Length: 429
Image (cartoon, rainbow, N blue to C red):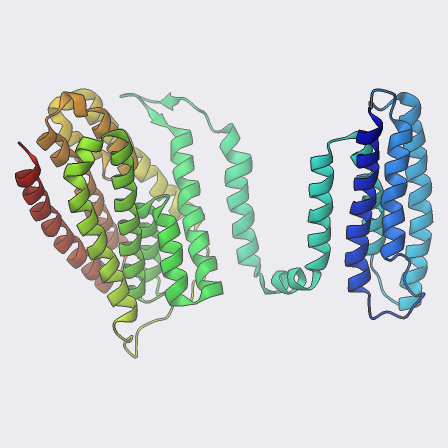
């Protein structure tokens, strides 16, 4: 390792110690002089000490040698003993129980040593993360105090679904007709649970109106159908205003129209010219409905406000994911059987839930289809997705939630059909 490289690593070790020391010094700035076990200077020296010992422990090529490993381990044990003694004395003097300063000093020493023998990017990023964690202590404590047991359990369940269960779910399809991809169904379940959890958190932090709309717009980037399901469930359980929840579902639908337009524009620009006007009109109608529903009128006296009681219900999410997985399977089976000959029927079947896959399939079929047939097929898939949301609202939601969505869906379908006819008349040769 060159002199310049080694010097820069030791300097980084010193800088990381100084950064963590500045945070510790700022946090204890009101403490009397001489009452702290470690401050800015001590932490800077801890980082420098770790860096120098790491440099000594590494061989000529920069690799850690056996003798160096023994030296570094013994130094860490000695350092741990010294800093622990002073940390204990500080706690006794202040009559408190805290290991933060001691652990931070140990981490500073380790980061300094790692900066000398390891990846400097990991070392510097870890130092910044540690300083941020220390400075946000009060906010973290307040945030933890506001978390309910149900919220914590739901977050752990969502993490288990994503990090524990997903890697072991089988990859290949199972069953006849191409089979059901269990991993795909499980990913749908994770998406449903995530959208529900994000909506819960958004309403809790931002309030009913902004929370529902922001969560719906974000959810629409993943699955507007999942947003419709979650909002219908919450409307039925009285966790929010059907008017605001219906507006959120409409906004998610508008986002899905933008997604379809973008995908079509990339894969089949000629098809996009025909379907984009109808999709953009549908988007405008849904956005307008959402804005008027939320901000155009005041809520009625008896109208419930959003008080989400549960981030998501596992078995409900799993059942809906299985249903959506079967719908996707049915749409793909129709597409495989009929191909271009049954493009409109297969697009309508595929669009029941997976509008993105339907859009990709129809765009790829365009060389085998006429422009008119391709436009009809793609918008048939979009229309079936809209009707799926209406069906979900009728089955799972409250009456006025369903009525609002059915009304905007009807207007959207009629307007889209008329715009498509005009577009075909003007653009087709």
